[in-house]
Image (cartoon, rainbow, N blue to C red; front, side):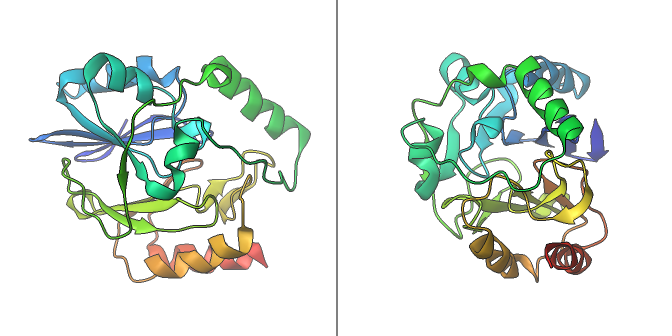
Length: 237
């Protein structure tokens, strides 16, 4: 699905993957679940591109529902995988945590788990090699994505600002659809290592101008960053 020229989305509000398509190639933000590979190829074909045009995958953090097809593209197509240095071990499968789930409603939770399992979420291949970045880095990829550290959901959680498509990708620093309760609208994401740190870190994006604020779970937000953060803080209290 094309959201706006140069910005595409595959998956759905449960788990989403985003593509930045420029004349210089394609940058993928997060790799969703392994089963999204088929949707990726279809979206690239629809845009007149193919896997050879993909220049890199940028992970907003190292959790498995964002790793999906990353190792497949790395191993089969030589696509580099980028992640914050603090989440590199997590992305490679060398470290894991067990954050609290928080509030749960049965039907949405079953829907999330069933969708993840159906898309290969139980058989995630961790990238065996990753390229690390740090806060403030501008990556040498189409769209010139800039990294903004947002530690809290995980130590290496980041936002990715891509002015070329006026988009801010926030991963799981927040969500607009809680996968365990089904509640929609800006709010804290589940499975967060340090909820207090995650909330405080969002001040780092307060002054970003973006037409699209794009979480890993839930619908993109088009009401501007200040309104997004106001809604998030209201929901968190």
